[in-house]
Length: 303
Image (tube, rainbow, N blue to C red; front, side, top):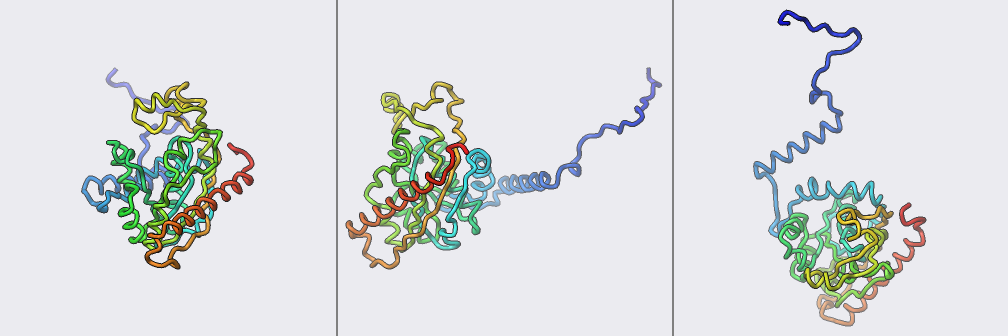
């Protein structure tokens, strides 16, 4: 019927596509910001330092993916942020746990989002991280580097906040029965780096990561075949397959403790093994006592 007319129904408004002007102001601002970010990337208008750190990519992409975990899933409460300097360097030393190193990433989000100066955390990682094809590249873009003296001292001298988890794989791969019991801190290489650069050490305690993936066993045969330091068996993995990779929504607390100054020691203090050992033990003991205090304050694992 070529001459037929469309008669609108009384009381109904004509349907029209949703335009940009109809979007919520906050959503529109985010879309505009994201589009500007994409344009800068396409034009090559961004900075990367000689260690591969890409601050904008880290903030807009990597940390953006972690923020829902930080704010809504783990509901992280960060305290003691006043102990992190605003502009100068410091060495953050924390306990390690949780099978997957989410504790390190959540600490990174805490300093970037909750610190008044929005400090970037430059973490020291193991060789395994940077030998992995995809993971190594992402770690570089996030600002991290190998756990070696030259890189650590260089970052500290440049005024960066450097993060180290001296328990290493012994910490994140320990069984659930040993939760919140600190493992050995190695030979104190992090203390020597702080002494040489005369930067403060900030003992940091993290509660909540132990319960994300409760490790009830270690499949050592599988870990050797895969070349991994451990292969965890948890209540949900590998029983539930990929679903077992979803972390449990435990309640987290991250406390940055009172800094331990190093500038009062002589310049060659890092060459004194007894002094390095004593400082390492002091840092470890301060973290352990803070863990006990936070655990007593926590009302519920998932509350």
